[in-house]
Length: 545
Image (cartoon, rainbow, N blue to C red; front, side, top):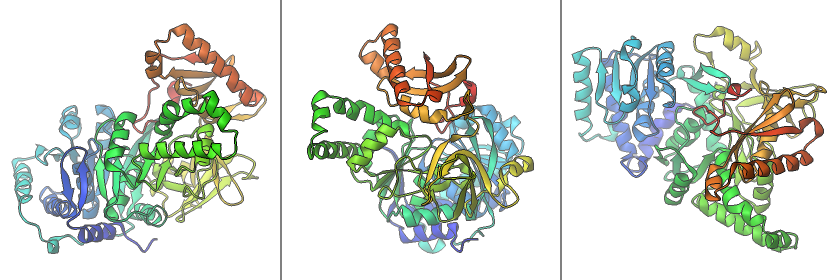
């Protein structure tokens, strides 16, 4: 058990950064740390009047916004259990999560609540709007009166002496997180205050932020990665967090990066790869540039310009970009590393809240996801972990308590010795650097018994200019790559279907020259719509296998 404590981090941060800006809704309202403290204080005065006790479950659904973050902090520092729900879930799934989690209260943006059927959520006694903290539903008129009275108190002065100081033990339950996995509807991950504190302690040591640093939050807050590193950690460090609150298209993100100039950036490969393919790769493929890249010193000049252009694209003020969620194209990695671009690849999962492995960009190794975080042990279930792929196992402070009301699923992933079986496959070198090969459930067994990891092939395919995204599947004729083209490029160049097919066939032949025979792609199949994805933007593979 850790000696540090998450709620202590929160109270210290609010007190020490009292007059500084804590949260901003992009191009909208801002809240200082003192204003956040005041709302938390009055919410915690309201909770018992609504019949809420410590340990009760409180659900939270809505777009990324400051009000979402404030409600979250009020819940966990009161000693209740937060149940964050991704707003992309269907109404039926949302209602299932609320009921399964035994939630008795709900915070929601009005559009997210309006599509729900209150009669199908019998345990919910009150619903508060994240738009203006007004009552959306109450079990009786007295609850509505209490909520409306709470709203009037927010206009009154709030001295620092009133700031709550309740410390919630590390053993207590912090959150139940339901994620949408690529193999179907997921389970409720029970994270304790100790699990979250472990993530905070590690982040403070290895991803340092200081009060006043700017952070742009655009990953889903209801997902462990975005929540922990874009919200919880920066807030407890006195940072100014801006919530995008809109679909994070590359165009919008680049605009926001330029305006906010964040100090630490989290990303998924798609964003980096899109910028590279559209702005950098066409330059590198020019005959003149290819020639200059072979001349000593000239290659350094060109790579320096690439680094400058990419750095400016992300605001020019970050000390690192941490990439996770999927494999990053090897060609892109090579160019970024040669250019000295400050990026690294990390690895995690909700069951660890989420951090499992990381290394700073200065010590990161090619294709590696770093080393295990200090709070965890990590090993590969393989007789030769450095050369033979095996399942990644972890154990330690970050590992979840289990799945809520699902002992069978808990026993399947957590063994008697405390090892969490991640379901991911990888190798580990003698220095402890992890190399992820893919999901055990997506691995394809080749005709001669070889293990084929489709993610490795897809990362290569996605590097081709005309490819937006891809999935490699096993068919009767062999491996087939389903391809969704980059429709912006198709439309810009007014390309016809025959031209697209011809280019894709060229790509396939080029790819097969670069990979082993047992990984050869028999056919590229073009699809007309984007692949269906989970809210965290992972492709639902089970729909296409």
